[in-house]
Length: 70
Image 1 (cartoon, rainbow, N blue to C red):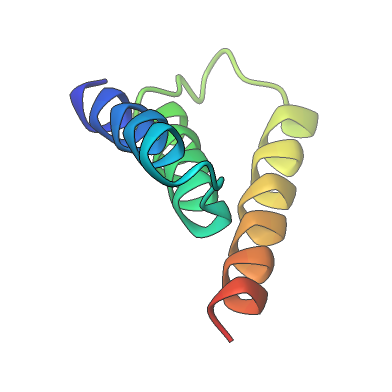
Image 2 (cartoon, rainbow, N blue to C red; image 1 turned 135 degrees about the horizontal axis):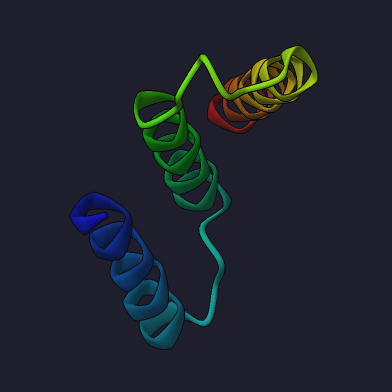
């Protein structure tokens, strides 16, 4: 939670200083949030469709990060 809060704070301060949204920073924050969700995930109570949705989210965020970086 602390890492996500720091990333959001950095997003806000960068926007207030430069009036530009840093897409790369937003994607990294999203990846951290999804990784946190996976870490605290209870596999016994989670449906298979939820796991597929998380995997799809990670894949989409990773591809978008690679596109933004290049």
